[in-house]
Image (cartoon, rainbow, N blue to C red; front, side, top):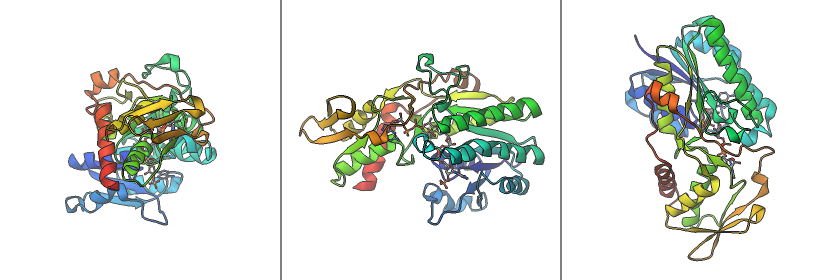
Length: 343
Ligand code: NAP
Ligand code: F7E
């Protein structure tokens, strides 16, 4: 039987890596894209232009807030796997557009699940759940599938709704629905408004003389950062099991934003020396004394998730999943890619 997948959020970081993975496995891949006034297919351009995929990669205009559109697509495409990656995915922005975030990141999931249930409840469904569900209880780290949830943002709260309707459709209708509770995963394709990519772009531009310094918010936040390419493999594995379930994907290693900054500048042989504290903390080049990093409170969030550290033991033992790229390799890959872009 031909494997047919529908990916919402195909133009995003994960959507692009997942498309590559499924196509390499022989799938026919359909992606949902929003209509923009400018072209926003940068991350999948290489797939769209690959002649090997011209009969197996298709894009459809739509929006996950539009239930008619979702129903029509499920009916027309007949997928056997659906990966729901679309979301307003920026935590900071979710405080500015909370209602839209609730719609796009929360309510849209039940629209998609209903479209599947009414068309073909045998379709396997992956929901892009997140470590932001754990948000507020740092003392519970490392966090696993059994750690209590306590979201700290409109984004986290919307994802909590999506998490539970995904579980509910599994229990109520016996559908094959899975939550991947993914900790932060990054790559050279990461959006530039997320902290890792903001840092690696700044390092490249500063070295190229195109930017003076890097301004950040909370340097003390700790995140469990992995490589997106490793994580899409886990998404696929979840849908290949005999039974559906919920799985944490993480590295079991945590670093502060400050450590990420240091590691990124180290890639270009710059050592950061920190002076001051709080909003007066600044990072200088230890050789030249040049100011390279400062803190701007405009990047602080109304509520913050202080510590994320994930325990991927269940995914490792049941799925055979293991992250391959280390923290250092990830930072290096991102800095190198941005250096290539700006030099
Ligand atoms: P991303 O790069 O921000 O991509 C989000 C995707 O969703 C984009 O393709 C975007 O389309 C699409 N989208 C947004 N609103 C939509 C709407 N109303 N209708 C249709 N499409 C819409 O996110 P990502 O990093 O790839 O993450 C993928 C998913 O995993 C997201 O649900 C995210 O919340 C979740 N997640 C991410 C991480 C992580 O660390 N990356 C961790 C845990 C969970 P446009 O290109 O048109 O904007
Ligand atoms: O922030 C701090 C910020 O925006 C990481 C999404 O993919 O992962 C992502 O959410 C940390 C936070 O990612 C800046 O306050 C400091 O503590 O890169 P981020 P996130 O909020 O962790 C989760 C798992 C998802 O599910 C989300 O979809 O860095 N930080 N200074 C900053 N963050 C940003 N963006 N910009 C700064 O200048």
